[in-house]
Image 1 (tube, rainbow, N blue to C red):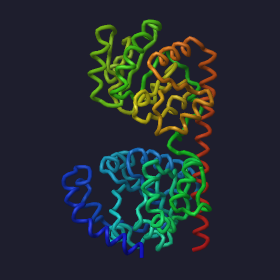
Image 2: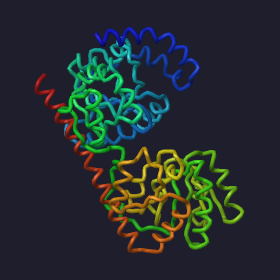
Image 3: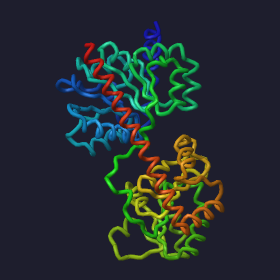
Image 4: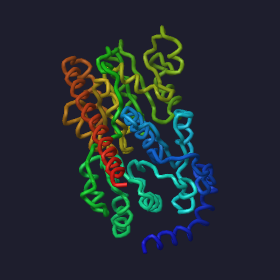
Length: 415
């Protein structure tokens, strides 16, 4: 009955959705592809279908694929995504090595047209993409449906709780939920998933494959302020000016999260210091500026690697924070602000382990940074603890993939 009601409402809303989509470029670009997808070519019976909604989930998908490809007999994957820019990014990255498509809309016709008669090894849905018709389609075909790195946000929990009676019916088609924490495991149970089919395997968002010994690479006299957001700029500018006066021989990197801040940051410092953009600095190895504004994408992680200490932004103003584990990959002590709702669990672990410090104000940020730079013993201790936190996160990938393979193998034996 619930399936009939859901699809009746869905089809009634299609004309309104199409009109809305025509006014939104993000949706319009893939509208036809998602309504009338091209059927998959060839057999996909031995393929793992991974759905990654957007950029964040796509990073997880890449890491899962890379890890699983190291296992014997696991080498065929297909990725779907909701956004054209994520699709295009993955296509550029994988080329002909892996097919990447837009996910068909959750309409039976669109899903059947896309998947055809293929019986995938499994459908792996990353985080919280709950599409009822997609799940019901996979169940009918005998395809294991596994939610990996499962999470239910506060707002989503309230909304799903109102429809728990319906969600329970949808979750009957899900074989396994691999939750990213105990809190999220309990939330999936609250909204209708069978608790016996939910496992807390840890958070894949913080997994990163590491090269042996890279955490032991020597540090430079570098202080980095990464992922800085607009409302944080008035707080960090005086902190950097004061630190630069104390540590004149240190090189300061500032990486704004929003590109429109690049010129503004240059204007704030150019009167006092020699300022250079990172895109220019990379081509001038002998240059010795005082402050570098990072105006490129993808380079911040390597800057963290060489840093004595790093501040991770999006956290001194109510933005929800950024990934404070990135400096810890290399044993770099980390500092962040009080607004880390998006990374609440990992922030608590970082602070409790002693790998990082949480501050509330610009004054406290200056004092803490100054103290850590001056105390080599403290820096070494924080670095070791940081590597320990990262190693713990690596186990989450191992546990997740083991659970996926076990569920897939059980399905194969029962088929």
